Image (cartoon, rainbow, N blue to C red; front, side, top):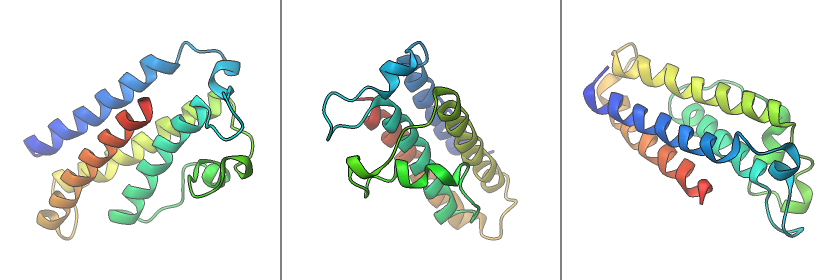
Length: 142
C-alpha cells in the first residue's frame, strides 16, 4: 500500500476510534436521546458517519449495496428529523459502523496495491476520499 494511503487510512481509523471512545460506554437511552424534536440523537450521528462512508466509497470506487439498506432513510440527512424513523439498537448501529469501515478498507487496499483498472487516477480519488471521511467523522463528533 502506498505510504500516503496507508497514513490516511490510519487517520480514518483513528477518527473512528475517537468516535468510539465518545459513545461506546453510553447506555442505549443516552445514544437515542434527543434534546429537542428537531435535533438529532447521538445515534443518528453515529449512523450518519457510516452511511456517508459507504455512499462515498460506493459512488467513487465500488458499486455495492449498503451494509444495512433498511437504515438508508433513517441516516439520510435530506430527510427531515421527524420523518427519519426510529434509530436502530446500539448493537445494530455498532455493526453498521464496523461493516461500513470494512468496506472502506477493502477498495482502498485494492487501489493502493494496484488491483484496479486505473490505479493512478483512483489513488487520487482515494486520497481525497479518506481526507473527507476522516473530516466527516470528526465533524459529527462535535
